[in-house]
Image (cartoon, rainbow, N blue to C red; front, side, top):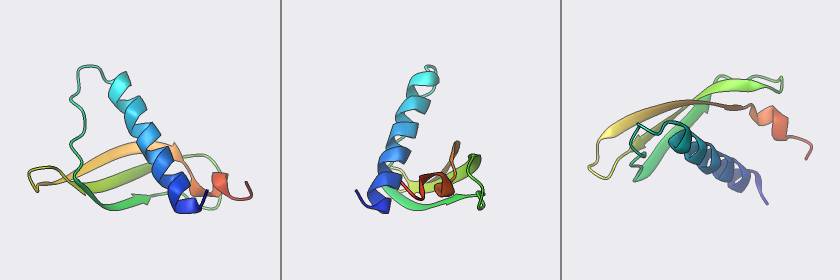
Amino acid sequence: MNRNTLIASSLFALLNVAAFSAQASPKLDVQQVLSTVDDGGAACGVVNARMTYLNSHGQKRVFEYKKFADSCNEGS
């Protein structure tokens, strides 16, 4: 499994957990992901991340979440 596949699968898993944990919140309507960024550094740990995307109506939206830093996946 390459790094991009691992990152994408981790993101979708996180989105599923977020959707189930926020029962009152509607599901995300993601048509196209524009960018993903995080404030992670060299240390492994939980960091803040942000995904900018277009919904099915072409509106630009931002989803903020927490994830493990990319450095946590290195060496595996």
